[in-house]
Length: 94
Image 1 (cartoon, rainbow, N blue to C red):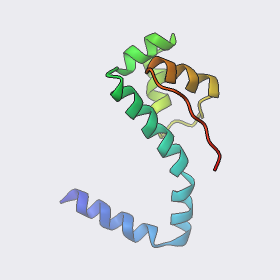
Image 2 (cartoon, rainbow, N blue to C red):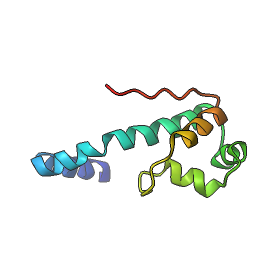
Image 3 (cartoon, helix red, strand yellow):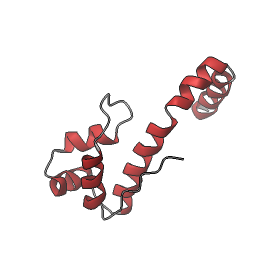
Image 4 (cartoon, helix red, strand yellow):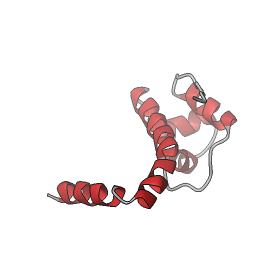
């Protein structure tokens, strides 16, 4: 029931061109965060395990995966993360 109300709210909100424009600006960031989480899960690792492999803290990995983080990760951090989860970093500009 709650999910339906959320979907209805989202549909109504995105009908507003200004809201849609702001929402669309966040798409690349959401996609990156989703890819980071999916790669970690696919590797069967916890945030703690990734942090240990990267030589950092669990809270740093939590921030890296969080959409609410104000900081953008560096390419070096993304390379370290990819290596820790046995993945490759592939950056594209389309």
